[in-house]
Image (cartoon, rainbow, N blue to C red):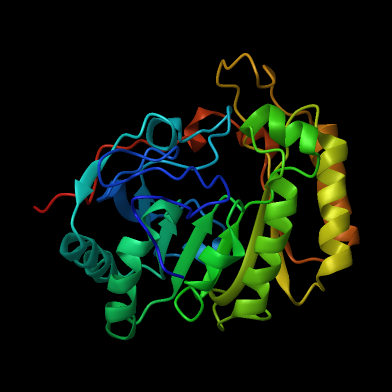
Length: 297
């Protein structure tokens, strides 16, 4: 893929922004911008393990969900701009903390800038690269990651065009995400865990169950079961929806009935799955971003 940073088409929005002189719809300009880099213990057990996942939180997002828990960085674009050399240093600093992997969170908008770095350091780094993303990725952009991303952590958020339009202004979300996840599984093949249960390669699909959207969630589980075998992917069903005060998003928390009915469908489909304790769905799941691990010293 040849990228023109004066007419950005990296994501399915294809906003055509000139990122040399301005910023895209995602909020990104012409430099890498990150909000935090740290060992993270609160991913799925096969990702965090006992030493944590080395997460790098990138600023900006092409999707902009109205209920986003990371809105400080995804929508308000909090973070610090760094150069490619500093990005490489951060990856190795995380490795020194003995993390299980390097996890790139919402990195799409910076892919042309970080990809050459990843190519140059991957063999020396010696850790799996996790691509943690919204599911709203074009297959063309994902092709850039073939051979670089060892593990994909995509969301599949919505099945219904009406819901995706309401919450993300992206009516084509499922159309795009279904193709994207299929491409991720094609690249990684069947998931692989080591003897300690740590994921070494493969695709782990996440789905956040949203209040009032239970039937939409069940449609997603149905599609996944019809498209992939239990050996192809791992599923993570999340209950951590937290009301943000947005008038467009549900103002209540998830009920046990809503969440458990989706978990039941995942189990019946035979997928290996991770399930959260619904009683723990509160603001503690919302990360604090203070440029941890971004600056030297």
